Length: 382
Image 1 (cartoon, one colour):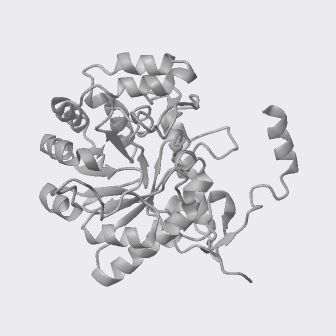
Image 2: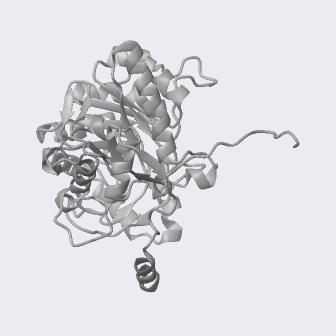
Image 3: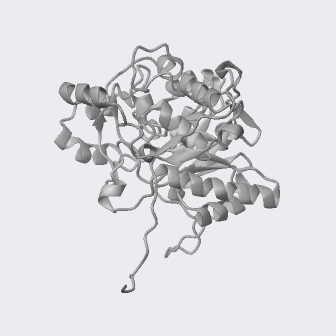
């Protein structure tokens, strides 16, 4: 056998695996879903993605009061425009072929630090924990202003984030210095591998976001070919968390970010080792979302290499219905919290940490086995 240039390992996404039922079952109503990020505890292990079509200050307040954590994009329209309703209306009304160019134009307006403070204050006045997102290149400019205005959690987010970065600049963003200076919890993403996760944890961050390119409106995997399926990525980062916890006694929360569409995906994320999930498109479908049934990613407006697109996802129900039901849909896209509780009950897990120990198997036919009539119905309706 001739030598290979490089050996490829197999990686798994949500549709490749299944969760094995437990030897003991539990009452779903007794499950504890709490997600902890340093001193903050959230009843739901669910974050709303920092996308302008999803999280506005008013959405963040409503979501926070329901028990989750919504993250506002500090480099989006709410920090560029006094009144973001006009550029939002232009984006929603644009023809699909015009969207990318229009997004680039809308997001070329300068960031305004006074608006950063104002949006934080608006959310703070709603009585919620305030989380905001910045990219590494703008962290020094915006994060400190946000914290001064009352932000509780800073999320530093880019398509791929590492603790070490090669650059021409004399001194870029150093995470351990940021953590020391900013005082509030810092969440960093996105990463997909054991070694990178471990290095990021060493800097003192409180949580990691897992996922490169799985989102419905992200095209990173198509544009540059980079990404790892979410189950494998979460397993790797969770393994790093366990090693770091055992060695240091400090627990860093792992949050699977992107590609999650159903309650089953939420359950598989937790069973893969996640402490929580970050959702985008499911919440873009909420009546309360500012995008009114449209969604686009943070990298969509990139001036030179956009890695995202505007997608019409439709308005499917209220935020409360998407989270808690009741629902008449049978496709798993609503009552996500109820689905997680039911899944935990089936494996006998009363806590998120116990759900992380559930057995999983490789099962690529799990969604099609015995489902010929469902598949025929779906085909005829498309």
